[in-house]
Length: 196
Image (cartoon, rainbow, N blue to C red):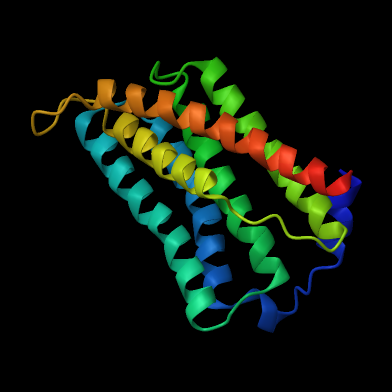
């Protein structure tokens, strides 16, 4: 926990560093979280589910967009490297937690996914405080895609265009869980291999 605070303390959070396009996109994802809480707390229905899913896809798209802008226009910053994964993990965790009381996500699956995400975030903070970067692996990218696909399907939930989104979401969630745990194990093995 101390390493996270020491990392935050070292971030350059002046106005010029904060209000870059990639950081604004990350902050937008964080600001969208209360809206998802309200939507998923309201009575479930086809319209609410479809609207929530479309909003989730749009907000998730900003994850790719902020990375593209950062690379294309060289807008990388230490703050951005912290905000981007944090925003993703908060958004995914919020949706998974809010889907539990609706009976769409088993609590144990949500717990494993969230614990892995917190663990990898802590690992990255520790590495950053030591001047090392823990990059995103291809397995991490795959798990993100399957998490987005699973959550989107479980938000829609009801049959639509002949697709059983409840079943599709549950299958994608299982794949996402396996990829989430596997990529987490690889992150930790890689980190401790460098340490020892």
